[in-house]
Amino acid sequence: MIDCVVLDAGALIAVERGTPLLRRFLLLAAQGVLTIATSSAVVAQVWRGGARQARLARLLRSDLVEELWLDKETSRRIGALASSTGGIDVVDGHVVLIATERDAVVLTSDPHDLAKWGLARQRIVRC
Image 1 (cartoon, rainbow, N blue to C red):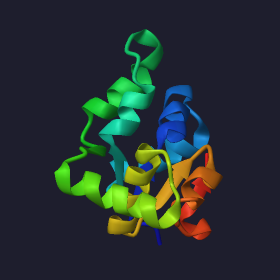
Image 2: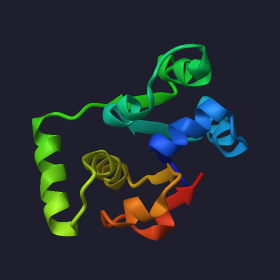
Image 3: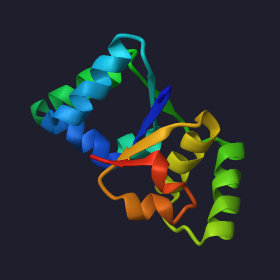
Image 4: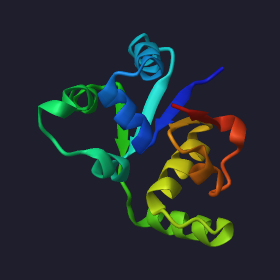
C-alpha cells in the first residue's frame, strides 16, 4: 500500500492540467489515505503564477502537500548521492531523497531521470 507520494515537476504540471491520475491521488490525500510531499525546488521549476495555475495555487495553499526546503544538510546529502549515482539535476536528487526517506512513490513525467538517481523502478509512477 502507498502511504506517501512525492510529486516532481511533471506531476505538478499534471495537477495544473487536472489529469485524472493526479486528481485521484489528491482525493486520497484529502481523505487521509496518504500524504503528499514535494520539493520547494520543484515548485520553483513550475511556478509562474497567474490564473493559468489556479489548480496548482490551490494545492500549494492547502494542507494536502508538504513542501520541503533544501537546507545545508539536505544539500550535502544530495551532492553525495549525485557523486555515487552520477545524477546531475539536483532537483531530481531532492525528489529522490524525499522519496527514499519516506519510503514513497514518485509521480513523474520522466521516470528515466529519477531512475538515474538510484530510485527503484517500482517506486516510480508515470503521470
